[in-house]
Image 1: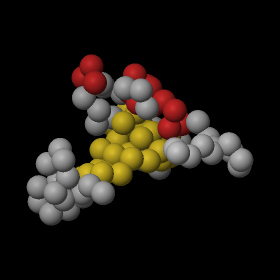
Image 2 (image 1 turned 120 degrees about the vertical axis):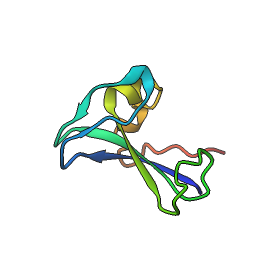
Image 3 (image 1 turned 90 degrees about the vertical axis):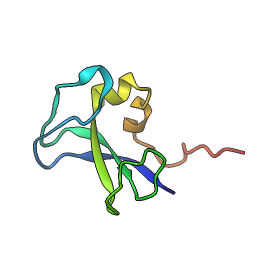
Image 4 (image 1 turned 120 degrees about the horizontal axis):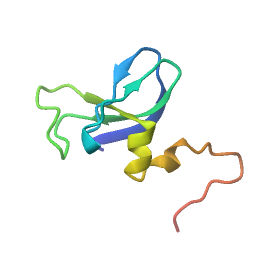
Length: 83
C-alpha cells in the first residue's frame, strides 16, 4: 500500500492542500477534513525524500472530488462488503 486516506478532525489551523480550483480555504480547529498520506515509492512520487507526505483536503474539495461519502459515519450493521 503506497497511499492512505482517512477523515480527521483538525487540531490546529492549516490550509487546504487540494489543488482543485486553486482552493484558498482554511481547515480550522474542529473541522473534519480528509488526510491523504503517500508513502515512499508511491504512485504520485511525492515522497521522494524517504518520508511520508501528508496532504489535507477540506470537506468542500473532498465533496467536489467525489469523496464526500468518506464523511458519512458507518453505523453498526450497515457495512457492505464487496463480493
